[in-house]
Image (tube, rainbow, N blue to C red; front, side, top):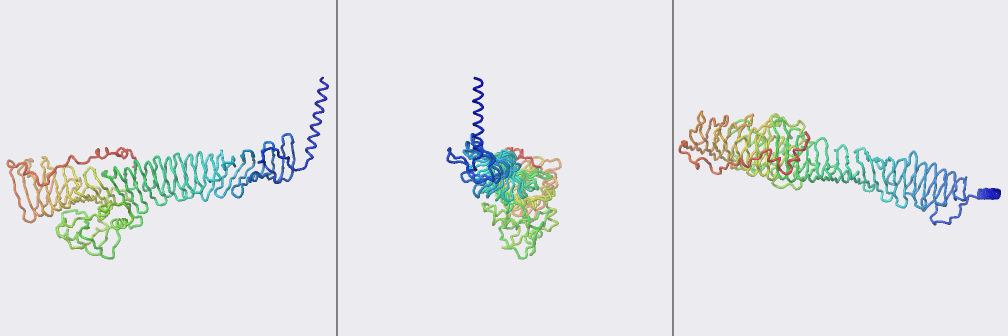
Length: 636
């Protein structure tokens, strides 16, 4: 039995080798395809070097080209398995899909049944009309038109280089998905994130993880959103922020044009001007970079940090105007006479000492060919470009003073003057940053102000940082220590960031609390209140319709009497919260009531109302809706 088995085995092996030899002698013609209709077709090869009829494989060398469903596959050497419809190819791999896509590499594994190609090499390159992808491994699904590189790769498009640890590319939609250490390097910016989708047609980058974009115009960061690489326009979500050396703007959402430096932030907005040490929080922020304007809307609180004090402003809306980058530092000359109507008169110079009526008239009616403040001119020029600013705010950019508050009514047309450069330097905020960028701050709607030397309530205010002036509108109330000052309009002048002068215009009323808590009261059409270096009331000057009630005290602070005076012009001098002396001009009418005869009705002028319970405090402002956010904003 063993011998018979051995003989049968020998015969079988003989038949096998004889069959193989016959097959090897066959010509290059491919084996008949008895399987699927979509078979890989050999177009050409320099030679056939091996064939196995059992496994139905053929080995080709030299300039080998296959065709499968419109896709050409080229290489130096290929092993074609007709049974499985599979190609294993080596050397100078090229996949050509019409005139739209080319992939080159060193090794190819191609499954004709699934139309799936695996390309390997020291450098695998995918090219189409949109991009060039370089990596070391690409898996390409021709049925889905999707290429996948599971190893680090880089894509070149125009002047941008995009790299990631792995990624997907749809060759039909031209849509990329980058995964892991994603970086886009462009001559003008660098984008970094962990995953990113990118549309090569629209140049739109879409991300869902923390992303930063750094450019010469500023840095952008967000946790989710879109960024157009071509237009530099972004739509960010998840605590987004834009910043540069001058400012930063952040919110829960941010739509921003990085070229124009303009955009909108919404939700817990924080705006910071670094050079001016200013922080503003609100519900919504709109920045217009072309004109240097930032508008914060809803529950706004601003904080400006200075050497001597910190200014807090709460309001419904806040505008921040920046300086024109092209303007000269001090002023520009006006060749022609500038005529401004009476109801737009602005007195911009602080009065450092008591002035005579002649001095005041000269101040109101300066010589022709004076210089106009650049800030005012630029602001007026901006008005034509700024949209959605209420008319009352536009008017207040010009800072008008009602005509009937003037001591001597001027002519129908008058001129506005500006102090010389030395005076401007003296009056500037010496504690403010040297390269301050902000020119004006406007607050509107339920305005509350807190500083250690004064607090206020008003409908709106304009803070001119260049000239150190703060204008309060619509019957403001200002508290200074234990003094209360009211008028239709009030202008504060700061010097070295200290309270220097208050100008009370129209229906002015001052309540001064003396050392024994008596209410000294002063009324008039226009009142000037001067303060010393400690921001304590030093002098009050009343011009027009003056009235006063003050308690005369002896050296032991005992009441001598209650003095009621009516006079067109009067001046009060204070020392340590006591009236030191009084000067009346014109024909005063005075009545002194002895202490024992003073009754409650005699102690109050008409319109007297002590409103200290309304005085804002630091705590009351920071306890507002976004106060906690302001406290947590650490930028300086």
